[in-house]
Each structure stands twice: as structure tokens, then as C-alpha cells.
Length: 88
Image (cartoon, rainbow, N blue to C red):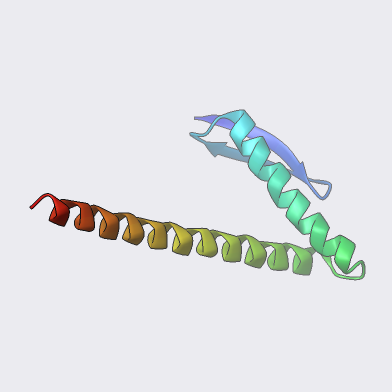
């Protein structure tokens, strides 16, 4: 478990984790880009509010992908059942 240092909106952070340094830095870059998108679209927003909105957007994206994954898995299971019935 290593420690990685990164910067988001000028603030330095250190995080310990099992993930590679490159992966953690990629996550930090992703988060900062999402926050900056909010700030660019609403320049008067505070960094805290921008961070919260970016977190909400990231959570929405995650939930949508999870729902899509579940739908795909259900579709695959249904197709597999249909194939099994063909061979019975």
C-alpha cells in the first residue's frame, strides 16, 4: 500500500491505497475535470458547491452504468435461457 500525492483545484491531497499510483492520479484528474466543467459553466459558484455538484454528476453516471449493466446481464440471462430451451 503506497501513498500518492495529487492536487485538485490547487489543494494538495495524499491518499493511501492498494491501487497503482497511475490509477489514483487518473481518478484525481477525472474528478478535477468534472469540477472544472461545473466551474466553467457557472463561474460564480464556490469550489465546495462545484465539488458537490461534480460528485452528484459522477454518482449519477455510476448509477446509470450500473443500471445498464444490470439490464445487459438480465438480457444475457434471458437469451441463455432461450438457448437452453432450444436444446431441451
